[in-house]
Length: 464
Image 1 (cartoon, rainbow, N blue to C red):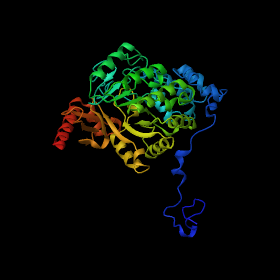
Image 2: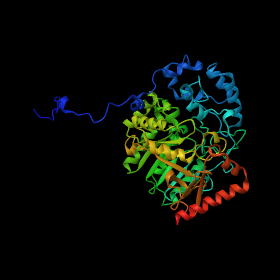
Image 3: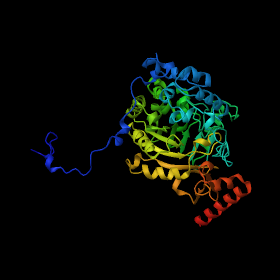
Image 4: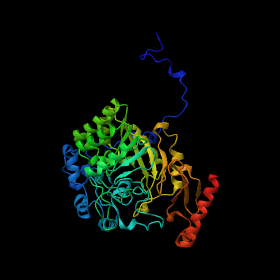
């Protein structure tokens, strides 16, 4: 009988020599997705059936937007001191607060201070830190590179289009806190709301630039676009001869995956654009944003399976966040779990230098160390690139590609010859993580400038 017959093993058990011991449970952890009606642990959701919980409209209407709603949702699950802390944190946050019931139900309210999901979405005043002296509100200078409002043209062949300024949830660490969401006590926003006249100016600019081939449609969040608006934007761009690729950016699959299951019109709009793109020889993909393994549940897997069956590519962009995923093993599980649900890990961003969230930033060295640990844990195409989106508009640089890194004083210098030749872009480690002597130097404005100039000088020398 042929050894290729699948019913007949080609070798006896005695002939097979094990090369490795059996895999431990830690190597299979990424497959263990939270399932069942886990939301019933939350007092406000105790009587919510599955059909209701999976309704994206119900999710939106019942999102937590202030301290009173937080209290009403979790009742006595969290200690009173935490509630008071969060109430003050809401007042001091640069981002408005909006947290979906799905995300609320994934937080461990028995230990909210250490919970990685709470850390991303609900500010507490006691954990806030003073901003680094080199921080700015628009650290990536997106507005400086905007030829028309809501369109950033930084890379030669790519532009970022911001058709709206709302999201299904608001991340504390949002790099676009200068525009996204409502005004807060700390920040008066640049208003980029839905405006067809503004969109028309952006489309006119894109069509006039033959070098533009790649458009990222973000915001805000494309999850918040009505299906017809999403189709209008996508079709307009696809019909331009110069456009070859469109990326629809959305946090939605991570924070409200049920919309893909319950809002057929929105999911069909994405499918329509992907199919239209394929017929034109163009690519339309979805870019999403999971940052911790606990965000990925059986509901996430069901939603991603819908997109996978429709042939829609989904890529993920995480942010490296202190107390969330700055542990090498946590990042390994995240990367593996993403691959398990057919989401390609694409980028892990070093936390942008934005105001009001200094407690969430890590050192550049953390990204270097974690990338080294993660690489080799899975296939290369499912291994993310760790990048620094260079402050000042230098674009995304591989974290390893610095010209000079002063670890003592926490100053990294990058150059971007294909983006903005002749310029240097500096990333600064959190001062809290530096030695006391370095912290003292940062407190002195004169020494601060001397450190920065010395880093620039050394970077210039290294680049020559």
